[in-house]
Amino acid sequence: MRVLFANRLTALFSALGALLVLFVVVPLARTVTASSPSLLWQTLLDAEVHSAISLTLYASFIATLLAFICGVPLAYLLARVDFPGKGVVEGIIDLPVVVPHSAAGIALLMVFGRQAPLGQAFGLLGLRFVSTVPGIVIAMLFVSLSFLVNAAREGFEAVDPRMERVARTLGASPWEAFWRVSFPLAWRSILSGAIMMWARGLSEFGAVVILAYHPMVAPVLIYQRFESFGLAYAQPVAALMILICLVAFAALRGIPRKNRRMR
Amino acid sequence: MSLQVTDLWLDLGEFHLREVNLEVVPGEYFVILGPTGAGKTVLLETIAGLHFPRRGHIFLNGADVTRVPPERRSIGFVYQDYALFPHLSVAENIAFGLRLRGMGQKAVAERVDEISRRLSLHSLLQRRPETLSGGEAQRVALARALAIEPSILLLDEPLSALDPQTREELQRELARLHRELGTTTVHVTHDFEEAVALANRIAVMNQGQIVQVGSPEEIFRRPESEFVARFVGVRNIFRGEIFPGDGGYRWFALEGAGRQGLRIAVLTDLSGSVHASIRPEDVVLSREPLHSSMRNSFRGRVVGILDRGALIYVTVRVPPDGVPPGATDFVCAITRPSLEEMGLEEGGEVFIAFKASAVHIF
Figure: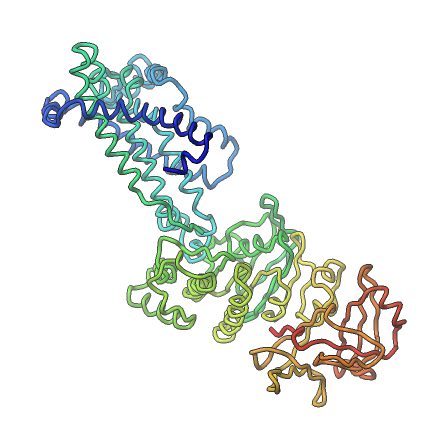
């Protein structure tokens, strides 16, 4: 601690920085501690809350899975292959982070809505996106895929391409080199990206609410209870969601750091 | 196995190969020598099948493998910085290629055991690559490459990342392995002495081209271009044998110098057939016999004076009236003032001397 107050500069900076840290911690801590554990437990048993939270966890998991299936290959390409327009693709992957999330919801509605051609095409297959679980999934996918793709790309970038080359000379096909060398070595990064994406998906409100007010995910439920019944009713649900995200966050921090030496 | 490269052209980012032709005979230890950025690694990787050339062909044992992917070429590859798989133990690293070949558990274990004994890695088998020293890591990389009994072994600057002592140890290890296994080897380096110590033949490479191929002696005695002469430098390198001596010294007898030939006092732990090198700057030249503590002092005759600007290289033949191969030429570097002061000219008799510690045995 003493090093922070070694001189006036660091002392002042410590005070200013502490304000920001407290600004994050105090509201979260206040919300989580406002209700007794027994009230939280009762809230969790409330059928509406219960189903909203499970739906949120589930939909975000499916979104993460979809991003994993298409995003890990994309991340590998971005890390390994120099192709024309690579910079543009990287920019596009970052785009969902900067677009207002309600606008992202509108944009998705324009393409996947009942009147839109793609929406109609999926409709023929029995897949609808408005006020359905698939709608929630694509909203979550859209706003949080950057986290997984970027983390996976960094993971692959940290693997020395010469390790893949050695694997090839030892008899590995490109597939075998990927599964036995690159993927296991990038796995920690991919996993932490997936957890980050999942946690980000859980928290999504703006894009989800445009596509699907019902069925209700937890962030929408918090909003609905706040609007209809007030703070006291919204708070326990909010507390539960914060706790769930803290657990995910702790898991993320728990992933051991990358191998000390990658080459 | 033989390796043949014909008229190879390749462009890869800033690296280019231009009209590369090579022929490596079965069992040969072939060294590609060149400065950083000459395209040596790219050439090696192209031989391995990791890049496909724009033009030209690669033949392994007479078969055209130019378009064959690396996994079907049976090549052992070792990189400068080892490229061990950090998520696998030493044993698993060595077994990597064997498992890919669908070898049974027991056969894999036996092969790993055999190769690790050969390279004295037995005590390290359960270790993780990150816990190994540089020398150990490079021996594991060698074991991993040799485990698959490759038809050809490609070594990319295998000694360059190591400290000098480890480098010498591993260099001898490479020579021993080649003697024992007879694997055709292509070794890339920028270090001339390393090349001389290991190579049957050397190819000098510059800017993506092979500029000269020949025995180590041919390369430094008869450089065919200004580049080779400059890169190899002016130096004294001799082949010979070490004999026991006294007072802490050993004798180095020059090859081809005959029974009464030249013997040089040296400091070394090595024995048998070796190379010796003496930097021209370490050879002292004078008109009169030198009375000094230098262990090696010879009478000779000036047979050549090469003006290189800052330094003058004087070639002195010992003994003065001998002719090669019975006689030996030493090159000494002196400054212009001392050349003028001594009034040296070709045909004049001189004395040369150097310390035993100035002779590098390798």
